[in-house]
Length: 153
Image (cartoon, rainbow, N blue to C red; front, side, top):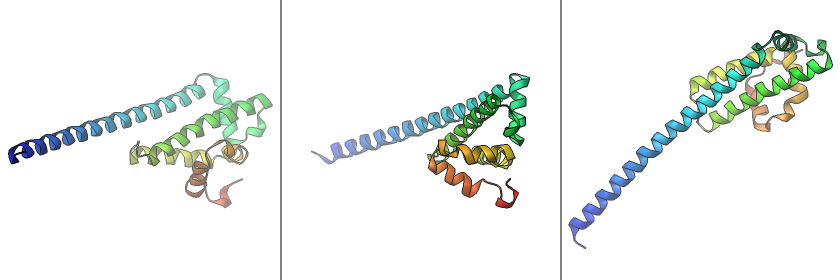
């Protein structure tokens, strides 16, 4: 094999690798955009569920302060709403660990989780239901997002 053939072969390999790198980068952008879209859709779902009627909004707001003041079926409804909320935040946590969302989106999600975890009714829910979430997410939330101990009910 002559040197010219080797050079042509090397250039072809480099061109192929450059093309593959470009395709991988474009695919990564598409995956991040899809992840962002899914996360945004989850937020819209939670907002729609709580805003769709006055009774659900009442259960949500009353549950934030004291879910024990709700009748049993409404306590269950509040618990399911919180599970939906925190399952979504758990997804954000996983997306962040996989670098599938940007830092700004992750900071926003953390701020919202901190707000939820500062609500007395959510703190009560958390103590009773956190075992339904992944151990990694629970450990992260308790170490980084929980309000200081003295402000918890």
